Each structure stands twice: as structure tokens, then as C-alpha cells.
Length: 214
Image: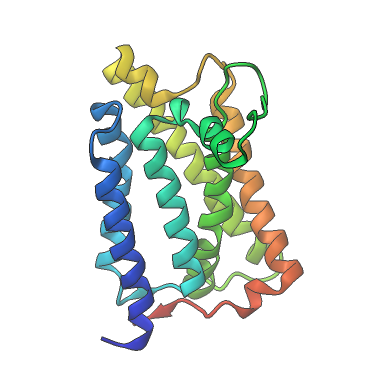
């Protein structure tokens, strides 16, 4: 095993342990399975292409954090993650009422984190595969994240139409908001733009080790 391989493999092992714990007795098993279909595919691709597409440790860490956030949402369903109760237990006081009464904003946070945490890997991928120049160097990774957000919202819509009933409602997770899909896509875009700006201000993008291709 090469030294550069150890950190991603440790992250994979930790994620496997967290995934196993959260796979035990999820609140809605069928919704958990639907939410994890994307995870099965994504993690499988990362593992299979590990030698030919080796991201930086920073990018792998961001991916790990996002996947853990997603698994928490899959365990409880996004609309029922008890984050307010957790916050109240940590602070020992009354959890703040954020947003409309009854609206669970965990899904909004994760959609923003999607753009924020996926962006480093997307940046490295474009730098290694396409080497865009000028404005396109910054625009293409953002558009990539935006397009993925659109695709995911379409998948949610199709799944909700196919399964219907409580399963469709749980998976779609609109919580009665007619503009839920548009807000989710906007937050993913905002997350990607935030990652781009933070990377530029701190010089992080320039310091990221380029994606290793073999």
C-alpha cells in the first residue's frame, strides 16, 4: 500500500462503520434504500476508479463529510432528522425556531453542503481531465454541480411518481413547499459558489494537489 492510499482507505473504513450503524433500524426502511441507491453507485465508482482517479485528501474528506450527512438524512428521512433536539441537548436550553414553524431545514443544509463539499473533487476532476482556460476554469465546475442538482431533483420526481403514497412523499421530502426543488437547486449552486469563493480567497484551489491520473 502506498502512503498516499492510506488516508482515503481509512476514511472508507470509517464511513463503512458509520453506514452500518445508521443502516440499523432506519425509521423508514424503503426510503432508506432509495436514498442509498445513489450512495451504492457513488462509492462503488470511487472504489473502482481509485487507482486511475485519485483525488486529494482534502477532496476525499469533503466527500466523506457529505456522505455522512446524507446517511443521517437517510436514517431518519430528511424531513424528520431531530437536529433541534440535538441542539437543545448540546446547549442545554431551548432550541431556536429557525424558519417557518414545523419546517425541518436539514434537507436545505445538506443541499447547500452538496455544492460546498462536492466542489473540491469536481474542481480537481476538471483540472485533470479538461484543463479549462480563462473564465471556463471557474464556470465549468459550478455548472457541473448545478446540472447534478437538476438531475437529482428529476430522479426524486420520477421516483415519487412511480412509488407514490407515503414512500413517494417521504423520498420527495417537499414538506408542503411547492418550490422545494427550485430552492434545493439554488442552495446547491450557492454552496458551489461559496466553495469557489473560499478557495480563491484562501488560495486553497491553487494548493490542492492535482487529481492523479494513471
